[in-house]
Image (cartoon, rainbow, N blue to C red; front, side, top):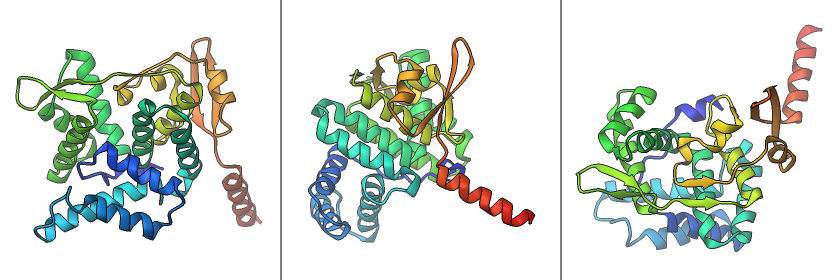
Length: 266
């Protein structure tokens, strides 16, 4: 998990409707080749194809779309399946939260940029791209690739409507704030958020009120109901008001690890 949280991966401007289209293609039963062909056609006019670099960008965007909703890391397969089920069940207005959650689980860099953006919005009501990039570079390294990826993630936030331009160049304010009241969606979003964290755990209040979820106003929930709603979450109670929510370890991995340990000690 740590390795994924150290990677950038998400380095293109990706529109919300492209993710929606990808999920719809998968829900319609298309295989990877068919989904890829359809996305090539969809992006043909959206991402210019004048030269090799632009073609490369289109391929990178398709890789991001496929990795988010089809070829996810194995530990995210259950999250992916339930996310697709939620897309079928919840109103269209809630789809943004599902795509946001899946992207942050697969690409924790998206969550890292969101965390810095959300913190600045809370502190001063706006977020300057330069400040966000500086904070992200402190976390991911002083590289131009980090700055460029952060810029493209911020442009994606603007495309999604969760940030909006202000009068000042490169300074953004909060856009649409979406109320999330569906208990199953809240549980799923909490799990997605944990996958974006290197240690896979967080106090409940930090999880629900995380700046990485700045576009959402999430209905307060009890830790017990959150964990009861998902077999993939665990609860560790530290004190009266300190409930730690964590990803439940896969028992198959645990038993495999024990077997390896047993054979090593014999």
